[in-house]
Image (cartoon, rainbow, N blue to C red; front, side, top):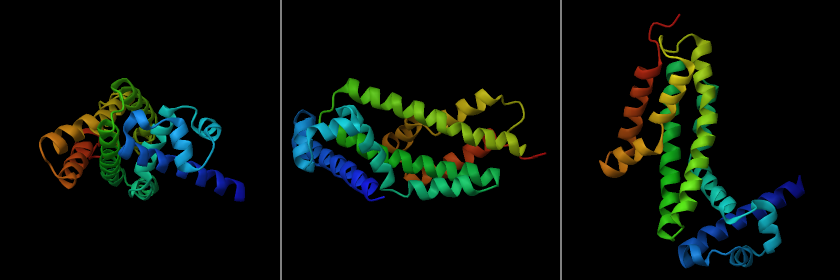
Length: 200
């Protein structure tokens, strides 16, 4: 238990050191050696935990979500037995993810993280999200409320597309919708696109 707490503390210090260095020194100054010095750990420890600079950036994205109400909303979504509420809470989860990760990506872009690195991070995030979201589609199907005529794959693809970062960026960043407007629209759209109102 003590060892786990120490490991978690070390991990958190490294992620925070990375954030500070990105803000003050930019991506070029965010070397593993500089991170280790800022976090007061060895460079070997940084590599052992995160493997690479990309690994640290992934952890920074994950940390940005934990600082929001993300986990709380996820647990609410997983705990409900009502398909419509599950979808509406999924919209809130998407809002949490998009808001937190957009801020983290903005920090990285501003710090000069090279485009290929950002693209790689984005692809990894999307693959992970696509895999995690299958549980919601399975839940709708098992409840008998998945919209008739939708195959499992099409339903899964629609859910992934609608909750994606491009939709958030277009509506919130480009068209200046408020995050609440985005969440309300997304909730209604998920329900109308995926849910069979008649049930079984």
